[in-house]
Amino acid sequence: MVEVFAVASGKGGTGKTTSTLALGMALAEDYDVTVVDADTGMANLLFHTGLADVDVTLHDLLIEKSDVGLEEAIYDKFGMHVLPCGTNLDGFKEANPELLQSVIVELSEQTDVILLDAPATLGSKSAVLPIVLADRTITVLQPTVPSLSDGLKVQEYASAYGTGNAGVLFNRVTDQESVTEIQEQTERYFDGPILGMIPESETIAAAREAGKPLLAYAPDAPVSNQYRKAAEKIEIQDREAAAVADRFRSAVIPEPP
Ligand SMILES: Nc1ncnc2c1ncn2[C@@H]1O[C@H](COP(=O)(O)OP(=O)(O)OP(=O)(O)O)[C@@H](O)[C@H]1O
Ligand SMILES: [Mg+2]
Image 1 (spheres, rainbow, N blue to C red):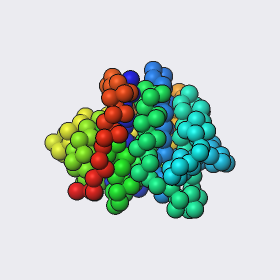
Image 2: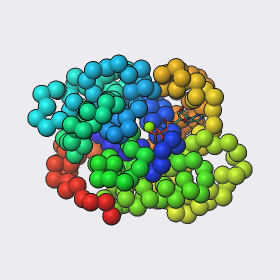
Image 3: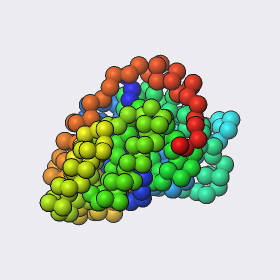
Image 4: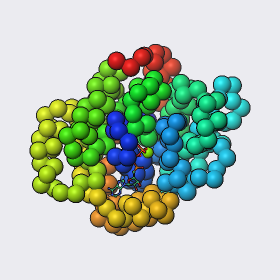
């Protein structure tokens, strides 16, 4: 079985990478999980996972006729398989982001849950690709009206490509009362559930400083439990790897709507 999620936001800095890793570690308590830095232009998942010095990354897999094997770019850390992306500009220039499709096909045959840490913006074909390739999106938003409208853009892209909505995760919540209105609007306009409300947290900032995912840095912190509860709300669907692979192989990657 395998299900592919794109962790998206439509905007930078909302907490996609933090949330990809926290949800990934929470889901890894029950599933075989692979997290992928699908932000091939502005990669940073490697800094959150202590992998800043690795030589082989997703960039090497995205080179035409690359002789680097998938397993060489995957690092087993924090109970997950981590496929980081390099930050080198030359690596980005040489990479063909559309090859991400074949990487995910190969991955889907060997893991249960794939989380794609998606680029912040939806401005190019390659930036939209993780949403196109995913079964469902997880949208990480700050509880503000502008952030919500960015999230609706993600939903619009997702539905244009037949990608479902696993839910919205609010992050950096400072004032519970002020989110009530946003919550109502979210329930009205989004197809999926609200997965959780993650507070602005010094523990999250400290985990980032330490170069560790939150659930590795502070497994017993209340905010880590909030991520576990959010992960519990995502019911992983039992898709056959072969069927997913077939769908990807035949997927035509369209231009953004
Ligand atoms: N709930 C939170 N409380 C405090 N700091 C947070 C919280 N969530 C994220 N941060 C911090 O905000 C910064 C951005 O988070 P993160 O890198 O996860 O966002 P992102 O959406 O992946 O950003 P980008 O769009 O640049 O990829 C990081 O320094 C992170 O530690
Ligand atoms: Mg990020």
